[in-house]
Length: 309
Image 1 (cartoon, rainbow, N blue to C red):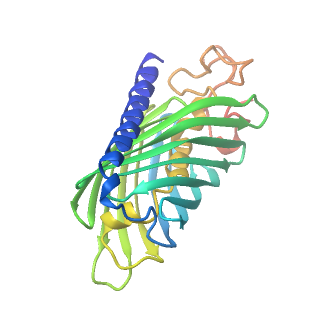
Image 2 (image 1 turned 90 degrees about the vertical axis):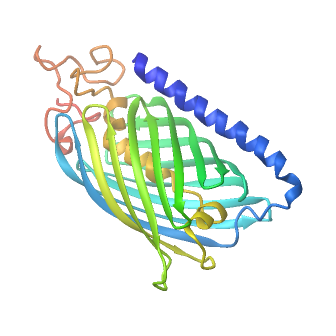
Image 3 (image 1 turned 30 degrees about the horizontal axis):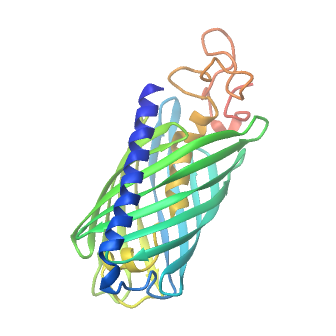
């Protein structure tokens, strides 16, 4: 628990630094006549799949998809609507979010994101700030905030989430990313790459992602992104002038990969909730004493929140 608190504090500090740094940089660029927050109506579609594994559960195929549509609101603000779906460990999480943001494509983005998601045995609602800071061919991106998890047959859980990424554009069309997240006390780290293919007549990118986390979690995915509605431009310009990331997609992936289990009190390392389970909606008892086991079987057959009756 101490490790989780430290990680959450570090993630929160990084987000705050990015937001305050972005505001300071914005002042420096105020006289430079910034570009519009959104270049024009534009969007993207993301599709992909791969493999995931976590302690005490069988490994499983992972599939994801998302779509986004962005609109300029004058020259200073932008509005984006996202929809997302993630299927892993015999559960499907679908939903979406809306962004409202201000951005100078030469220096920063500041905004707020709110949304909801729906799984077989739980609903979730989230809201929080997002910030991006552009430093030449580097980007620092962070978002986080409040997360409510409402499990069927159990009390809802109020949780914190934060995600931080550092991106490097090795070329204008090739980006490498490393990052970390803490979602409902489930912590993970990832590395990603996106390459926009040029000279094919279609604004298409190839993506790959590797992720590791608590409870021996690991996942590997590959996919594509198709951009539309904007002029032909480099990947770095698309990221900074057009649509921000589909935030719900990264949050849903973290939840599907283990945060739901952690928030429900089902920690495969200890076999029960934080206090042995019971009144707070966790799994009652533990494995060895004949009580209720967490993660002792297929989640499809478990009663909410993922516990054996």
